[in-house]
Amino acid sequence: MNPVFSDLPVTVFETMSRLARKHQAINLGQGFPDDPGPDDVREVAADALRNGYNQYPPMMGLPSLREAIAAHYGRHQGLDLDPETEVMVTSGATEALAGAIFALIEPGDEVVLFEPMYDAYLPLVRRAGGVPRFVTLTPPHFGIDDEALSAAFSEKTRLVILNNPLNPSATAFAEADLARLAGYCRRFDAVALCDEVWEHVIFDGARHRPLMALPGMRERTIKIGSAGKIFSLTGWKVGLVMAPRPLMRVLSRAHQFLTFTTPPNLQEAVAYGLAKDLSYFTDMRAGLARSRNRLASGLSDLGFTVLPSAATYFLNIDLGAGADDVAFCEALVREHGVAAIPVSAFYESGSVKNLVRFCFAKTDETLDTALARLPRCT
Ligand code: PMP
Ligand code: GLN
Image 1 (cartoon, rainbow, N blue to C red):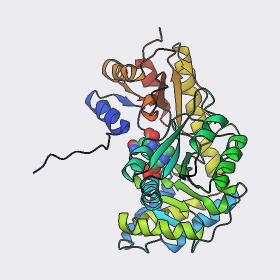
Image 2 (cartoon, rainbow, N blue to C red):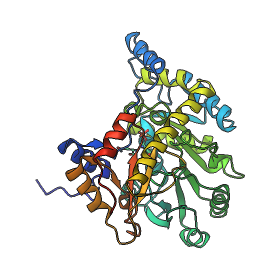
Image 3 (spheres, rainbow, N blue to C red):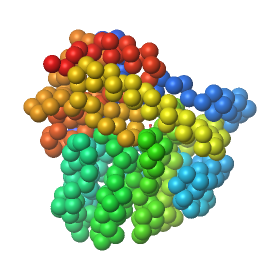
Image 4 (cartoon, protein in one colour):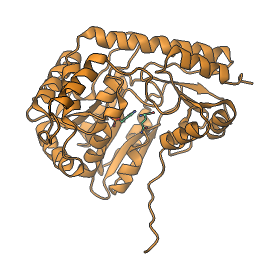
C-alpha cells in the first residue's frame, strides 16, 4: 500500500486531554462541564429511548424539535423562523460547520476567518479547497480592526466564519463590530456562517445579538447553535441550524450525505428542554458566573494576570510578552497535574503565544483542588 498522508492536524483538545489522562491531571483544558445536565431533560431522553424512539427520524429533524427551535429563537432572540423550511437538526454544531463549509465552498473561494478561531474551521476550509483570509484579533478586547477587515474581503470572498461569543477569547463582539462586518458581507455578497454555540453563556447582564438579526443579514446568514452547550450535555451532539430557505436547501443536501439524521431520543429531549422558561437560562449563567469568579480570584491570588471573561465557560491568563504558552501548558500538566489549553493553537499567524485558557464549568471542589496544585506566578 502507498503511504497515507494527510494534512489534517491533531486537535489541541485531543492532545491536551490525552496528556491529562496520562498524568491523571484535573482537566481544565477541553471544555466540558462537571454539571450532569438537567435531570428532567435527561429523563425525557431516557423515556424516549425506552419507548421506542430509536429508528431514523426525518432527515431534517423531528418536527417537534424544529418547531421548538423556531419558538426558542423567536422568544430569546426575536428571530422569525419557519420550522418547515428554515430549521434543521444536525449531529452537533461540528457537523453543521462541516456541512456548510463543504456545501458552499468551491476550490479557490476565499473565506474570511477571525483568529483566534475554533480549531475545526481552518482544516475544513482547507480540505474544501477554500483560501483562508485571516483577520487577527488581539487581547484583551479582541475587537475587529476595520483596516484588517477591509483587507480580508475581495471579489472572491464566498464565506465569512464568525464565532460569537468567541471561544477561546471569552468575549462577545460589540454591536459596532457586527454592523461593520454585516456591511462587508452585503457589499461583497458573502454568506456569513455564524457559530453561536455560546449564545446563552454570556454574563453580567449582556444580551446576545445574532448576526442574522442585522439589516440585510437575514438572507445571507447561517446560524448554528448547540444543545450540548445549552444543557451542559456536550456528548449529546445535537446541532441547531437556522438559515433562509435557499441556503437551507443546500445545507440539507450536505447533511444527507454526512450523517443523514441525529438520535431521535436526544432530539425529543432537546425539544422539551428548549421550551424551559427564562429562569433555567438565568440560573445557568449565574452558576457559571460564580465559578468564573472563583477561578479568576484564585488565579489572581496566585499572581496571574486574568483577562475578563464576558462569555463562554472559559477564562484566560496572560503570561506576558515573550511567553511560550505551549511549554507552560506542558509543564502544568506534567509537573502540577492541571491541564489547560495554549491559546496559540487557535492562531494561525503565531502572533499570540502568551495566553492560556482554563475551563471553569466545574464544581467548587474541582476548581479549588486545581488552584491548590497550581504554582505561583513568578
Ligand atoms: N463551535 C465552538 C465555538 C465550540 O466551542 C464548540 C464546542 N465547544 C463547537 C463548535 C462544537 O459543538 P458541538 O459539540 O455541538 O459539535
Ligand atoms: N469546544 C470544546 C472546547 O473548546 C471542546 C470541543 C472538542 O473537544 N472538540 O474546549
